[in-house]
Image (cartoon, rainbow, N blue to C red; front, side, top):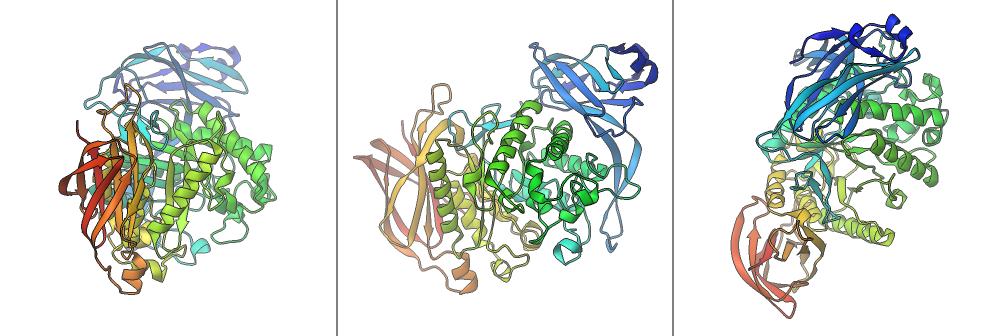
Length: 619
């Protein structure tokens, strides 16, 4: 609830002519909020401005003082509320109808991370000057159960993530980049626009199958595109203006995700905006182009033009102000597949990444992770702090054996990071049998075996998260393949990823048709130690068990019998080996294993498809 409104006459003014010319109403947020909950205040003013979305024109901020004395500044953002209602199921434009509710105004959102009394003021600056409100306060109370907080890179394991609470976070999920309504100009096909109804459906199914992560695009050609070219009669479109229907949809999706305990990586831009060829390209609808009233005549200038960079930073401020309060935001992805931008040039793109990443780290009061993605040329990633990204991504398409592809790309990425002397988490954020929409090869794998193999192989190659499938709306959902997430999620929740120092295991299989992947973990530094015991995680796959062999060739795996897996890298002693069914996540059996001379031997009586093994020393 919001407390009663007070007006500008109660404010202390930094410029008397500002006060005389402007009226301001502020509705204070709730007097009590849980720690890591949302505090929100509403600001309504007729202070002089041409563009309420442009922070160079009018800047409204909340200045908060924590119980510890720390000062946190949060930008306000311009906001229009909507009511959502479904249209007729057979409507040509889909089911979602958004109706404006109330008048547009500014809001400040803030997340208290300490318990106790917070003090805050609202400040406003424009061409007339500025002023500061009286001081107000609210109380942040301990939440039950205690929240995990925001997600960070692990302090102990450079390959993994953790919450502020110290609990491990291992992402398991998929891409949900847009609903089923890409325009015909992009796809050549028409899909009805269901907007948030699609996301509501997908997120609920993912949550039912224990997924905890999704990647969502804020543009450039979907119903979540914030900055789009000017449309007649729309004051929220055009350069440095942000589509309020799109922004409201993202609020809704973020709230839904939070209700399921899921986190989102928000992709802020994509190469498609910066291409005139190679479908799907949307350069002609980019508000930054000269033809649409912007400043760019060539796509590659997006990375070097001062006005373009200033406009993008303005968009970043709006996004951080509106969504950054939420612990459900896992990371900001600056741009999807930057190397596919027309006229791509490594030095300028690298400098742009450093500049934008550093800007986010200065602006985001909650310190969200920052990343970016390339379709292939991972050596172009900028690393060095303070402007470097926090984790790397890989996109993997094609191949008859998805596990083999994931392993090859993972090892290549690991070798490249070692060469750069900058080890950080690695996530396969896109994969698929094919790059083609509704590919016959993808559809032939009706049971999603390539998904299963990609998920499990990525976990056991020092992945920071499970690999993320791409074709969510035309493959995962219609074929109801969500069940693949649950076993991986069950398994990864049993491992304290952030409490160990991990390295690739030295494994050898006595039979050539067994792929053996794994890692060994040494307990972390004092204070982060789980229980002092060594651990090894192993995944064994029958190499015949691939999507191509089973779905295309109709040749089913020949079981491997009486094999032995040799594992090196553990200290001598007695270990407990828990064998896990990768299709259910349940324990099949628990056996004893002895390490002698640094060698553990695991006997595999029969392997038809795959199995996981968690090996832990006994005290």
